[in-house]
Length: 296
Image 1: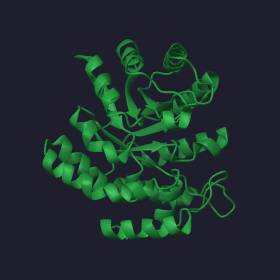
Image 2: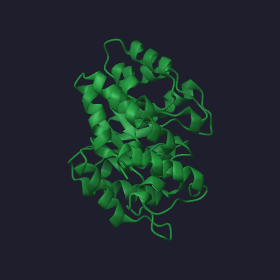
Image 3: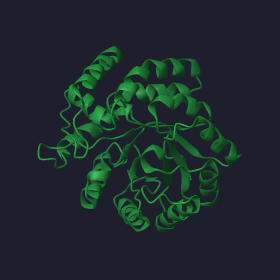
């Protein structure tokens, strides 16, 4: 299968009204802003989209709305993972009906499945849909790590599992995954904005980015430089963004990025519990970092 996208895919937030319902008018604005900023793909209903606190109905409606508004201009990748294989299959098959271009499936959290269980989980979903699938490895949230051998086996042996979003922060394991693939292509995306260029230098295709919510063009340009082989420029751009990236993760995502977007005047609303508003001292530091990066 062809690569879903190269460059910067935004892990899009979900804007809320004052009553915590989804603000679809604002969501449409954000989608248009991202496309105007040359974002290379939209990832709907991932961690940053607060999928964990939306009902299944809301979750699917946001995916459907996003696909309808994007209208094929850039790829839409739907987050449809779950700790229940049955639920992951359900969400994935529904997202496919709505026109999603691909799926992002997180490892089954809380259950703490074995590597064998992880493989059965993902192959069950892959058997149920024909869309290209990106695995999502984020052990800091899920409690389990996908081993390089597991990722390589899934991509090599399952036609529509094409790649992985790596948010383990373990560059050594990411390099090992790439090495295990040999001549078989894999779409490797950084799941951490501070590791975009290191992962792309190993052959990665880009990033699924929180930073892109507040700086879509800058994140796109950072990836573009790497894709064009100008790693000196790419490294400079990566390092320039580093302090802001740190501030965007000074509290659990997406607390800081929603605060940052509200500071930019985007009025994306608050968060659903158990997430709470950003601490004032962190917000001040975030504001200063945004000013230094030229986005406030």
